[in-house]
Image (cartoon, rainbow, N blue to C red; front, side, top):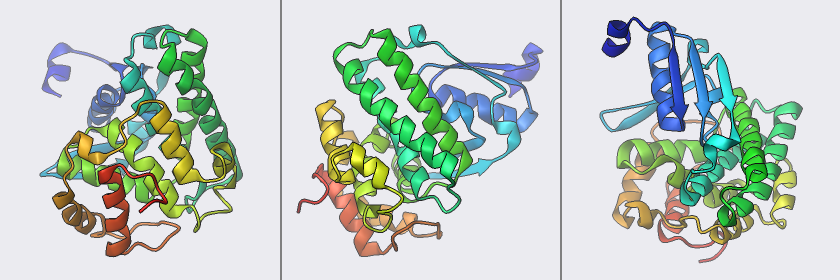
Length: 276
């Protein structure tokens, strides 16, 4: 903020992914500076009014119209050098926005259509990017999918998946995109039966078993599958469960300490959802 004031700037230009964009949003929330974003990953945060901030080991989110950037530019040419590992993790992060959008308490037919189209686009694009990272058409389709998923994220409330990611990122310092990528099959599988109607279209895209299908999809892309791979120990599970349940939030399936412990144990070990 001091650098902004000292420079005499009249706007914020963010070129990059969710961290870069998030910094610009944090500044704009404080001084209402106009924002121009050139998005180079698939985070989707460039089209939301959501700001996540971590303080004293706790991540919180807030919404405000000043937070949403005024102008966003997508150029697939600028994403050709995004490493495959980050492309895959970022794309799975975007897909998580869509999955939770289906069963959001304030979901509507339009956001659900956008969520399904966003999932479909990323499901088509990511395998191509994994083998041909400089394929412009696949990169363009991935940006299209991430835009759709980002609009869903900014339009409806998120639930268990995003809450757990905030806990693991804010209190255990796990990397954002990889945490989303690993947790997605487990959170989707956890809610699959309770929100079967809302998730029917998404499940069909992944062979009828949303949790297992997403895990297989991620494994085929070479994505990380276990929270242990990114620094989350089995001894951390109890603390994460306690933090996650400290404040109530909407979710289609009831949340209990035992159920969340089982979910996080599977994700920590990298087990395919539905296996013991």
